[in-house]
Amino acid sequence: MIRFENAVFEYIRRDDEGNVEGITRALDDVSVHIKRGEFVAVLGANGSGKSTFAKHINGLLVPEEGKVFVGGLDTSDDNNLLKIRQMAGMVFQNPDNQIIAQTVEEDVAFGPENMGVPTDEMQQRVDEALEKVGLIAEKDNSPNRLSGGQKQRVAIAGVLAMKPECIIFDESTAMLDPAGRKEVIATAHELNKNNNITVILITHYMNEAMGADRILVMDHGKIVMDGTPRQIFSKPEEIRKYKLEVPEITELAYRLHKAGAPMPAFVLDEDEFMEAIRSAKAAGALS
Amino acid sequence: MSIILDHVSHIYNPGTTFEKRALDDISLVIPDGEFIGLIGHTGSGKSTLIQHLNGLLKPSSGNIFFNGQSIFDNDFKMKDLRREVGLVFQYPEYQLFEVSVIKDVLFGPNNLGMKTLDAEVAAYAALKSVGIDESLLDVSPLDLSGGQKRRVAIAGVLAMKPKVLVLDEPAAGLDPLGRREILDTIANIRKEQNITVILVSHSMEDVAQYVERIIVMNKGKIAMDDTPQEVYSHDEELQAMGLDIPEITRLFLRLKKEGYRLPTDVFTVDQAYEAMMK
Image (tube, rainbow over all chains, first blue to last red; front, side, top):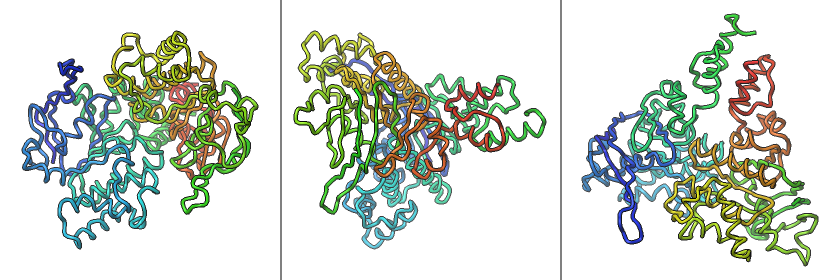
């Protein structure tokens, strides 16, 4: 679905006179292949290149060296851009910056309308999209009165109405409260599972990455780790090198394990932790 | 500076179809030097409440007393209040505008009419307390990293030497290390300068290990006001309000339910590790 081949992208900083002051390599020889239907979380410190990576997937940015292919189409060919943006939609961080229309329905219709989808088909697309994100009841209401989580779901519906094959969430949960965050993550998982939509989830919240099929860790423009949550988070020392953290319960189990307690080195979540405690108790290793 | 809210309500757009009661009969006492976490989901009234704390909004009914003086008194000096209660808004780095870091931080103190030398001393001290290196003073704020920008923005408020510092989601959008660093910085400032700090957040995890008192807001009312330990024991009520307790605390509550004798005032991995290794 998505293929990066030795992609390089640099931001050039200039002073007042336009002289080059410095160069930041936001993508440094990145090669990666993401398969159709994968749920991929991208982690990394501020400035590690996550957002630059995301913007290459729908052709907002084009690599200066190397190539990026989306659905087999080269993003550096302008003739492909419309098709690529329809295939790979993006949900951004600030819900309020993405809402443009008077009603939820009109907002969702904006994308397909621009693409010239005929009216009756459009109605159907909008309804379907709102149905999928669970907001069909809000159809005629003003988006401004929705909660942050609901606004992000409207933004997701707007992407869905374009019939995409891939959705990129660029820190879409950063400004939401815990309930809103859960709503958005749950919606991403449902779309991935039920509609086989490829999901790229960029986040600072480690526990949101735990449900992914695969995690990419970025540092200084490079992909430095690539594996399942189990593979990635069972290496807390390495994770910390990249200014990230292991989810707290996983970290606790790891430290107990290292201290010789009857605990596996890796537990994914609270349930696995409880499981481990129970089996340690059954084996008589715990009082 | 002590703050007392006495049956404060605030209604937006009264008498119109958009009328909304954002604060509903809030009574609070905030003594000197406390470290408070103000928690609530989006729309719970947190932002409306903090805007009352430095006079950006006035109550529709009820009264607010700063050091015993009512905000409605004729000789109440709003300008002094703005100096004494510093408000750091969400994503404050978007409000940086000057050509250099030092000029940006000086804007507040200059605006308050502080003497040039005093203003400069205050600005240097503020930048130092947020951990901005002197080599960055003449750099354009736009060339700093996200975390640095936020520190500069906080320094701009600190330079006005507030007695109460209110920060709205100071850790939002930062990576895990950046989050911890900024919260540690705030905890240090509070300790060194002995000021009241109110940390506004969605995230229980962020405030858990720092504050001594948590105020939970829901639908414009104060739903809980207690120590973190006491607040987190109401796990289900908090979830019904769209809030979470720290992961580790939830794990310990669950272990306790299964009969393990463990403390429930555990909020961090370090505390949990110690409790379990005992």
